[in-house]
Each structure stands twice: as C-alpha cells, then as structure tokens.
Length: 489
Image 1 (cartoon, one colour):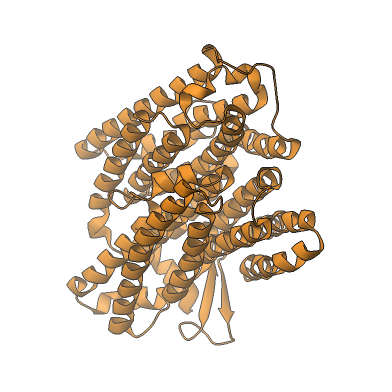
Image 2 (image 1 turned 90 degrees about the vertical axis):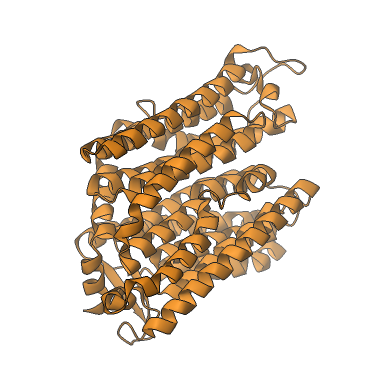
C-alpha cells in the first residue's frame, strides 16, 4: 500500500523547489501546486479502499507507538486529505490565470505550505505535531491574506495574526498541560490513559484546546478575524481559507473532543454553540452589501451547521456533518472563484455592481448560481443530500430540544436562501449601468469553475458513494476504542 507519508513529504519538498523553478520559468513554477495537488489526490484515492477495511498507522523512526511520531490514515483522515487535494487542485488551476502580479513564486510556495499544514493536521496521531502542522497552516494563511500588499489586506492579516497567535498560544498551553499529566503526546496513548485521572483535571486543557482551535475554525465568539481576512485576500485564497482552512480547524477540534478526551459531557453545549454560530453568521451575511463579506459570514453560518451536526454525535449526524463539510468546500470554493472574476469585471465588491452580470459574464454567473443554490440546499445539488442527512439525524433524536434547535437551523437556511436569491436576482434580473457586452474569464479559470460545478451536480444526483464514505468516516470518528486499539496494538 502507498505510504500516507507521501501526502505530506512530496508537497513539502515541491514547495521548497518553487523558488528554484521560478528562476528558470515562472510558468513552470505555477504548475508545481497543480502537480502536487494532483499527486496527493491520486494517492488519497488509492489509499481510500484499503483504509475503509483497515486504517494505516505509519510509524516514523521505526519505534512503536507511543514512542514514535505516527500518522493515522483512517477513513476520516484520507477523506479529508482527498478533499484538501481536490479543492487545492481546482484553486491552483484557477490561480494560474488569477495570480499574475506580485511575487508569484512566494504565493505558490505559501499556498503549498498551507495545504501541507492542512494535510498534516488531519493525518497526525500526535498532539504536538498537530500544533506544528496547525502553525504551518496558520502562518501561511496570514501571509497569503496580505499578499496583495494593499492597506485592507495588511490590516486584515494583522488582525488575523493577532487572534491566531492567541489561539495558537491557548492550544500550546493545553497540549503542555496534557503532557504534564500523562507524560506522552500520542493521541491514542492519552486517550487510553484518560480514564486513570480525575476528569475535572482535564477540563482546563480541554477548554484551552477547544478555544485555541476554535479561533481557526471560526466558531462564535472567536471568529472576528474571518470577515476581514476573507474579503481582503485574493479570491483564490478566500476560497482555500473558507473551503479548507476553517474546516481543518473544526476537524482538529472535533477529533480532540471525540478521540482524545472522549468528552461526551460537553457535546450538548457544542450543539447549542453550533446553532448560535449558524444563526449569527447567516444574519450577518444577510446584512452585507459587499459580496465577499457576505460569503465570509456565510462560511461562519456553515461552520455552525457542521458543528451542530457533529456534536449530536450519532452515526447519522456525524455522517451528515462530514457530508455538509464536503458540500461547503465545493460550493464555497466555486462561489469565491466565480466572484473573483465578477469583481474584476465590475471593479467593485458591492452587490449592486453585479447588476446585469448574467448577460455580461454568463458562464461565470452560472457558476456562481450553481454554488449558491447548492449552499442553500436545493436539489439536484450536493447541498441537498447533506442537509437532508442533518435534518434526519436531528429528528431521529426524538427529543424536543433537538426539534426546537432544528427549527432555528432551518430558519438559518431560510435566511441563507434570502440573501443568495437576492444576489442571483441582481445578477440576472436587474439592469447594470455602464459597460455592456459579453466577456469571459480566462479558460483555465473557467475549467476550474466547471470542475467544481460538475462535482456539485454529480454528487447531488449520485450521493451514495460519498454517503458510504462519510458513513465509514463517521463510524471511525465515534469509535474511540477502535482508534486506540489500532494505534497501540
């Protein structure tokens, strides 16, 4: 079987080759992220059938766990690695046309490091290396937000850096307290020893770790950095931050709660927090006149929905949450990529500047509409089966509190539909002023948007293969004892 180490080692090696390759050819340097993401996608797809039967535990250095650093490639990790590679590939293709100014080689190097950090977070079996990969992801993100070098980008990057640094500090303190109590950094070993200590003594590290990871995951009230960062960054970076970075932060938080701490007592609090994050995100998105800030607040709402589903902690709800995560990645990536060229054509981020864009940029406008309808949850797009699973899971709990919370979730979806339909109406049914005539985004950008749009429609019509994969991933995430056994056997 292919080693999961390659999912980290190959993109990391290629990242440091980018400056050297750019000395020979800038065009060749642009292809490096495409090659790296394509390689990772092939490796992840190759690994998937095997890990559905038996997770792969890669032991670094030849020592057995918990004495070595190990990677754990189970259904969840490989599914995330494939999703990171897929989204990274589509956005890297788009960036070949979109990123033309500034130090292009540095952009592609940082972009690859961001993907390496995200992949490392979802595969590591060691809490300190979780922190290391998390920092690689965050530091790359800070730099990429400021890539354009304008005032708004630099200001947003500094805000992101300050809040992210606080979050990283909290995470590191939580990990330090865990090491002080258990004398080990291996996730499975900590989970195995968790029952030997007073549960009150692990509450502080649990709270610190959730707070630290919650900053990157954009959970309320730790999400103040996100609207400025997403709206000020280049659209290709907005797409990867929204589609990958914040979801990796959420994954790491849920992995620690379920697998390491087994903290079932706080799940109801997380359910409420998810519903609150969803409602506040959607209400703020509804109030926006700037299309990128609207999409940024929409991401907060979506993260709230995913947290709501995962925290219900049933096989249906976790599968629904993971399915919604995939849906959000595809849909939000498409929305930001389409918005990037619509903003470029109109010269403004205001929704009012998109009036009549359906006639001026028909293909890009169609891509935006597909992404919007999918995120709202309309059939036959991928957002429909994912939201259906979450609704089904909430009703299956047969408790009035979950029925009430589901009502708030559906209210958030209605608000989401209202502001997305408002934008679609502006694109197709309102006359634009000034420039007329049709124009099209560059061919490589349209190819990237077409890939995301095709996947959204295909998975929406044929959801069963994805449903099976997320079902296996949900089983792994909930089976803490099996995780410990697989690593420490």
